[in-house]
Image 1 (cartoon, rainbow, N blue to C red):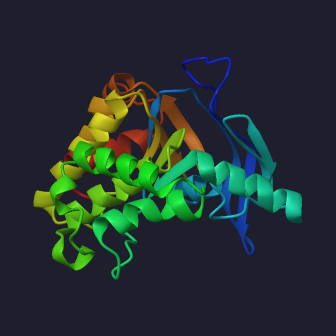
Image 2: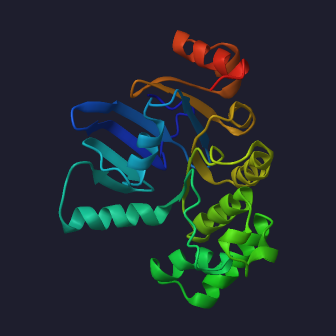
Length: 260
């Protein structure tokens, strides 16, 4: 699908991506360009392939066919071998991932959770990692919790720590896989506010979300997925006010009526 921004140098480029689980064809010839500093929201019904696409971008799922390129690193799906594994490692260093579940280590303090990746995976100097972690924890409003353990945090606080952890890896692209879906309604806003701040600071973001208000307010583009395909790609105002595909209209009408 063409990028409405027509960026000549996308920071994320997905080309002819297919993903099979056995005989099930989950992603069907996906083409997607994301420009630097762009915020792209992926919406669609459950099972449409949104999370699988996101997980293919950083190879948590191995694409069956096609190519993924992140910040100049191009990886062919379905290959094997040492070079392939190294390219995947390089792509993951450039992509931060925030999941539905928070995946914090329960036996580590907040600060230890946040510095683990930079120190162990990137080999960052521990003092530099601590400084960066404290800056990011401050940015998400949780520096005062740095010595606490995850069990003493609310769900919203855990997800904000997870965002700080991903940012401390200094990624070029942030991937969010329904980051508010596991939260109680009263905690969703605090996480969305952090994401809005990250977007305003210029981070490239690809967000799988059911939060239509966030997509309308923050996204540069909203992409609708259905049956493993990208069926609509537009600016939020155009997509929400004048959807072209009847499946998009049905999706938006359902959200507006409060259904999931």
